[in-house]
Image 1: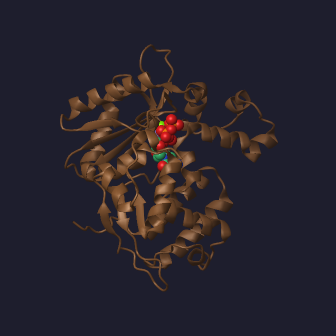
Image 2 (image 1 turned 45 degrees about the vertical axis):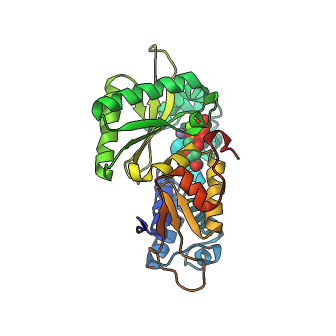
Image 3 (image 1 turned 120 degrees about the vertical axis):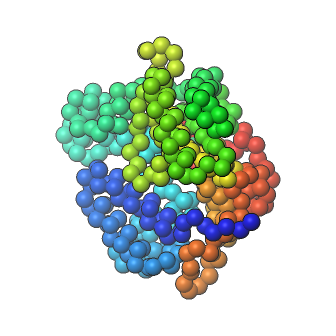
Length: 327
Ligand code: DCP
Ligand code: MG
Ligand code: MN
């Protein structure tokens, strides 16, 4: 059951670099915005060659050591850690604010200083207002409560759709940093999943469960949602919650990705790339071999995406239950 890779690897690299560029643009970092723009335009000019190694990347005009390393990071891990932190963790925005030269230079050194003086984006001010809430660990039983509310709302929207709590909860942690939930529906196409997620967010907001959305990613494919939820009294703490809407065909790869932990994921992806394969949240692919000369983009065939167990099997690693996926 071989299928074509949904997107070519260089296309993915460009997509991630563009997201990072927009973030730097938001941060008014003109210098980095410009370097990213130049690198992206060089990548676009390779017309499909898979730029996979440090040397390949350095050979591009306008790409230096730092960007070459970023390109290799995207190719081997499917993501940029810097971008993920900025996107997923509101407190990272704070960290950035604290360390941003302009604030330090202006003498804003405490949270209150930043609160009263800085010009913040909407997600940043929400992050600030609920800074202490988001710093708290969430007891396992409360994560289950949030999961139950989501499951019920989803059931009412569509009886064939299901939700599953992922992340540190699935790994069995006694408490969690946030709540990670996969929603899926057998046979649903991407557009249907998107509207299912939209409907779910609307329904849960109407119930006073979701308090706000926090996502700042612009090039998101629309199947991820980051925000905050609350159960119980009006003064109960807000919790960070992440939704990922996943086609049934990709459930195994998505479970593997969203269960983590992140270091375990990175080592699995590295292993895949050492074995001439490529693993991401959509599936395990037979990669283009790392030979000399020009590489075509869309030769990667899907090996497995439905079953977590089979992905382990193809990689030649004994299956590890979620509780043991910590590196
Ligand atoms: N993930 C990843 N790489 C990242 C961020 C996330 O592979 N840079 C994957 C693995 C994580 C999962 O997504 O386990 C959920 O991300 P979280 O940041 O919510 O991390 P955890 O749920 O593992 O821990 P926490 O209890 O801090 O939420
Ligand atoms: Mg989590
Ligand atoms: Mn999360």
